[in-house]
Figure (cartoon, rainbow, N blue to C red):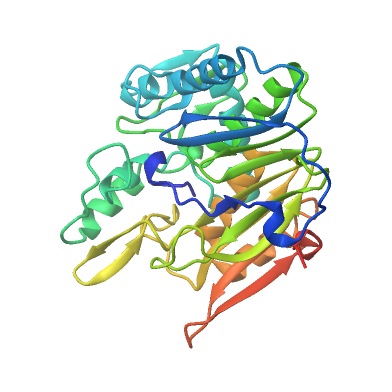
Length: 345
């Protein structure tokens, strides 16, 4: 499955918190720089301890532009857009770095999730009104149209190997929005390390990576938003602390269309072609790399809570927090694989 909304519609589940609010270490603050701007249709914010920040924003913006030129579906001349526009039988060789890494990770998680993370789902994304076409909900669901589009869905319907990509059907399209923000976060981290930044928190639209310590010498403290469409963005379900880890979240409660009186969220099930319906409201994943956390979080939303819990149990190197809606309207918080050790008590 893939995060189906245009990136600037992304639901920001993670909010950087002031450590003072949580009674953290009251040591004298170090002088940390804050660099912020726009990235991938949303914001980015970097808080870092660097020897020098001269030229750093330019380097960050250049990196983002390079990534977008390869993986953005909203740039008509990007590498991924050229593939999606190509006709049946077109071959692509020597894929550029950013595209290639995203594709390889997408293939890995496609297999690991049994097809629930599927970056070939873009034709359906656009049909349901969550893609790069106009954000209009379908007025009436056309099951015949959905079935027709399903013939294009599945990475196994492409020919992909280490040297080339062959588009086998007209109408096939790719979308890396379930991976690309996480990937960009990781790449920004590599950039900061190369510039001598020893401590930092990078946030792109809620996908994060934390390195070292914050300006008080503590782990970085962030919050997970309350999964309620009427909740303010700073309404928090819980706060967590992380260092040398990445964190990504996915949910289905803020971005949706209402069709014939029924709400349809932006997360689609690539095995059925329809928006997922489940009690799982949101999931947060802690992993070593944000590209993986991003992909796993999206996979979990497509799987639904019970299948997602089994999926996570087989990935012991990552931790998960599931926010599940109960019949009485309350929210149940369920931790997996040691996530609780990151929760701020």
